[in-house]
Length: 153
Image 1 (cartoon, rainbow, N blue to C red):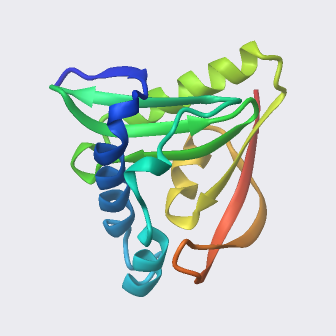
Image 2: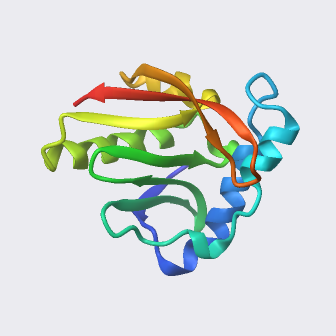
């Protein structure tokens, strides 16, 4: 399988919304209940995926199919999602590595992420360490447990 990382384009919103919802809904019941996942995925719309003014929004494409994305600012990973059918193939690691490289190049000393509990292991395998157990309000209004992590670059 060959994949390519490229900047997000204006026409990617619908594909990004679908993959975002698929990734959320595929999250294990061990981390979030069905009701919590539905609240997390609630209200996603194609027009919400726009090029950030102070960061980067990259996507991964396999044979014209958008399978992953990573949104990051100068010192924070804002969102990194991979279609469940394409997880475990190094795509997330490549996206995270690119984001960290940009952060390092911008002079950032620490990268941070506010993560779902289900993604904590991924970030820890890449050198991130938990700094705080916390919560966030989902788009559907539920308060969901989450974790903040950081990594020295």
